Every structure is written in structure tokens, then in C-alpha cells.
Length: 335
Image 1 (cartoon, rainbow, N blue to C red):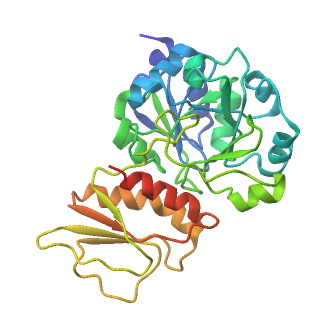
Image 2 (spheres, one colour):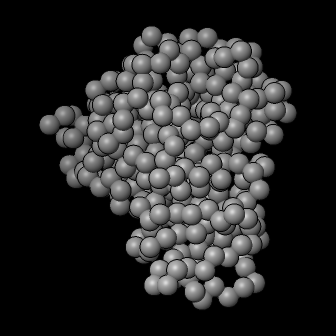
């Protein structure tokens, strides 16, 4: 039994993050090689000491995550950035000044001290500074950068509440810090700054338009990648167990086949009656994309729990945050 296990007698326990004692306990678990699930503004992360390869191995094992898929290193301040990143181009400084702390991950040349398991053997590291008081407090208490993918079984819908974490990982995590529902609801935007031009590797709530306004031309959006250079690039990801079909256009309504129990995921309220669907989820009554993104994963989980034959999803325009929403839906629909 590791020291982390001794400090966490009941694995999978959910504790309120508003209690300072919970943060102290969680920080101790991280320092001694254990795993803590914690909230960020995007989704809940499954955290370990980013400088401890043995702890990182536990993350991959708990999630059943392939080791060719790198992790994101979360930091609390610029000093910790220096422990993970070897060089910082001027363009990175402009993005950091504009968007950190916040849901933006930068891919940069890594320091040798960062374990190869964290970066999937790549010479780069993905790093961000989360804009969530619990995440910030945990990183500071642990005294080390924290590597954290989403706190769910690999490939499944990401968790946006502590209960989602418990449902998916159970006792595979030493402790779950409950900080309430995540405010953004989709994973961070990832931008690589190691090539000749900045490249969008994963869309998120920091939009392509916002990035372009700060640093000029950004290449993207990305396609599928069987050998990812950043998280979230697998062809099938963020996926429900129930098959999902994206409708051809907004406002289109399919007719479920005879005997098919189908669910419908709508971007906004419909004026039509939807009696032929077993369940309907509306992401935003007013069609607000930020509200839709915040509710996306929880709605997919509710539909998936009904054991339907199929989920039909209404698309949205791929501008602004719509690019991230459609990226998640397409990867969920891939088979």
C-alpha cells in the first residue's frame, strides 16, 4: 500500500472542495503518488504529480488510456511553467497574457524533467493554467504541476460533475473533490506553438476567432489523428455507448424506425411536438452556445443512461464555440 492509499482509506470518496481540510488531504495524496479527481472550469480532471512517472502510470491504468495519448500538465503560476517548458516564444507570452488562467492549453518544447510517459515520448508538453479556485488551490497545496486528463474511462463522455467521476471511475481514484458543475463544459482549446505557424489541435471555448485576434493566422481546425500529438485527437472520443447520428441540418427531424427507441439532442427549444422520441434533451432554450456547451456532456450522459437504440443530434453552425461542440459530436458519432 502506498502512502497515498494510507492517506485515503476509502477510495472513490467524494469530499466537498469548499473544506480546506479536503484540499490538504488531496494535496498530500498527489505528493505521495496518488490520484485525485478535481474540478476545472472545463471538465473534471484525474490528477497526479506531473513529475512522477509511477503516478502517471496509475492515471493511464485507471482510465485504460493508451500510452500514446499525452496528458496535459496543469500549473498554478509562471514558476511552475518553467519546470515544464524549455522555451517560451513571444507568441506564447501574448496568449498567456490574454487567456491565462483559462481554458487554453499550449503545446511547447518540454523540459527534460517532464517524464516521457506524460508527453507520450514527444519532445513537447501540453500545459495550461486552469481558471478554477479548487484546481488552483490543489496545485499549490501539492507543490507540483499536476498532469490530468478528463476523469472518466478513456473515450467516454467527459465528466462535468463529481458524480460523473464516481460513476465512471469509482474506486480507481483515491479521492474526488466536489467543486460543483463545471462552468465551461468542454475541454480546453489546444494550440501548438512548436511549428512554423501556430496550429489549432483541439477547438474549445477559446475560439479560433479569439486566437486569431491575438496572434494572427492559426492553422486549423484539425482532422482525426490515430497517433495524437495532443489529447482529444482520436477519431472516436467523448463517445456514448448508444450510437449517435448527427442530423444533416438544424431543424431537421428524423422519424425513428419502427420499434426504435430514440433520443433527440436539440441545440434549442423546438416548436414541434417530439412525441415519437423516447427522450429529448435541449442544450439551451435560447440557443446560446455557451450554455449549450456547458450542458452538452451531461445531456449526452442522461440520454446514454436510458439504453436507447440511437441518439439523434441537431448540429449547430461551426463558428465560435460551435466549432468545439461539433468536434465533440463528430467524435462521439464516429464508429
